Image (cartoon, rainbow, N blue to C red; front, side, top):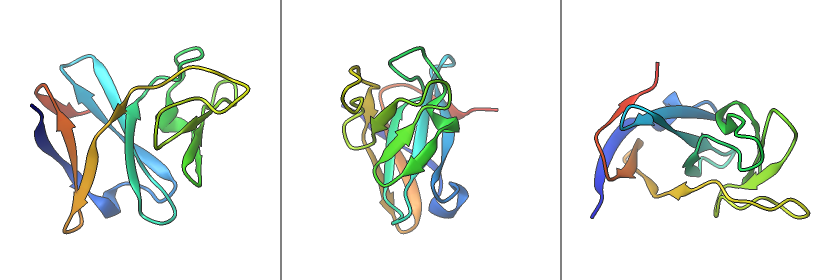
Amino acid sequence: MSDWLRVCLLEDIPLLGARVVRVAGDKDIAVFRTAGDEVFALNDRCPHKGGPLSQGLVAGRRVTCPLHGWQIGLLTGEAIAPDSGCAHRHDVEVRDGVVYLAVMAKVKAAA
């Protein structure tokens, strides 16, 4: 069973950008905000070479890895063909303008 962690206000995540949350001290989760204020969360590692997805460009419901240009679907975490691989997706929701992340462990905001 997951606990819901209050991450930040929706407005604290840059439009078409991300904010990073650190889980269990060593795993980063990128929380993305689209142009339509949809919010998604993926492990902050591209399945290709481990690039920081949080530093990628968000367009529609995709993020482009800043290292080699792979596109990752924000709904599923799956790489867009012809590439293949997956960044683990996490449940996230917005309630009254506050972003919450479903977590299994204690978390803190990354520095």
